[in-house]
Amino acid sequence: MDALEVFKNRISVREYSDRRIEKQVLEEIAGAGHLAATARNEQPWEFVIVTDREKIKELAGITDHGKFMSGAAASIVVFCKDTKYYLEDGSAATENILLAAAALGVASCWIAGDKKEYGAKIAKAIGAPEGMKLISIISLGYAKITPAPCQKRPLEDMLHWEKY
Image 1 (cartoon, rainbow, N blue to C red):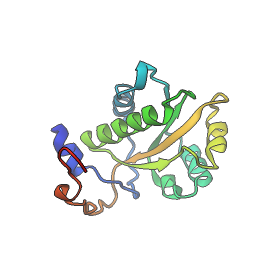
Image 2 (image 1 turned 90 degrees about the vertical axis):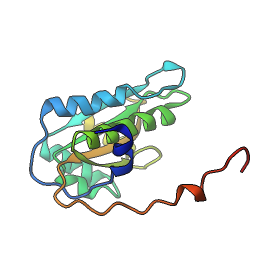
Image 3 (image 1 turned 135 degrees about the vertical axis):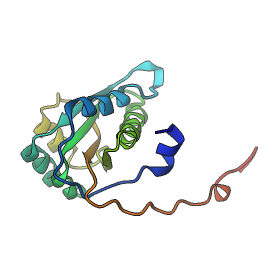
């Protein structure tokens, strides 16, 4: 799929079928994360792919707004080392993962991580080393129901030339 088409058509999906995602597809999706833009080329991210259904349910239960993840075929947990631009770098990696999933026909949803009270619990459940920052948890699966795309504000309402 053309990159611009992916940008236009990617949506957040919270209901997944029982279909599994092949390991190669998951590696390709995570691989897109490691290609993200990064401040000072620090590449502070670490990705944990979770496919065990019980572990996914455990992670879903820890989150506040990610309970739907319990039906996902996989999750990618994005952590970053505590660098000056960890949040920007980790968010760029997360967006790449979401877009790669869409390009490969895999539905996804970004579940917040940074500044969430449950961050330490997620890190412990995954076995992340101390000091790692939880950026996001990305649920992945094949859509059971594809929701209608959200209406976006018209570009002309937010685009400014030369000054605000």
